[in-house]
Length: 181
Image 1 (cartoon, rainbow, N blue to C red):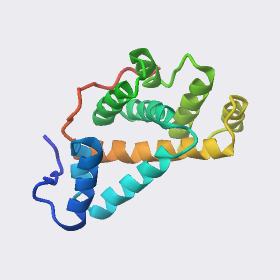
Image 2 (cartoon, one colour; image 1 turned 45 degrees about the horizontal axis):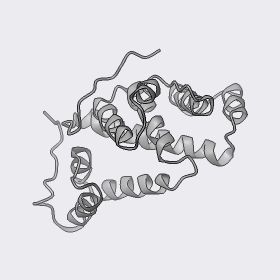
Image 3 (cartoon, one colour; image 1 turned 60 degrees about the vertical axis):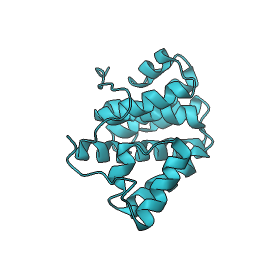
Image 4 (tube, one colour; image 1 turned 90 degrees about the vertical axis):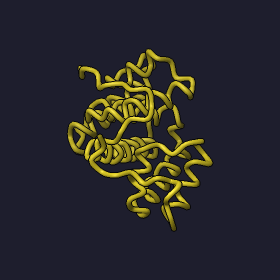
């Protein structure tokens, strides 16, 4: 059972209602994570803005989802593991690629470098080594994409922590974290 109440979109008012209505119009439903964030319209608005901005990044949506899976599994976020696995499937990402991303692995060398770099960011709280930075650059990522990887990791940490703290009820097909390599 969730430790923080969710806001029922049918009972929401003001800015919370406005934001939840936008979510419902785009997704056809309002996930429990966003209902939890709606306790503070400022938080939900910030999340939606950051998420929207990253949706337009040069990384693309598929790599963003794979990074989110790496972060969710590393942080042990059951909600985000489930949600991002579901979304990745809807985007056409293969099950084996989803499973690989959950362990910071990909058969595609460039994607693999981004996932390993994402895990390095997490493991070192942003203080990645010169070697890690050189490796991601050698894979073809420039400063723009490196900063965007960092931003995707940061957004994912935020959503992981919201869901872990709130013990958000999972409203996607449930997956538990897998063993980390």
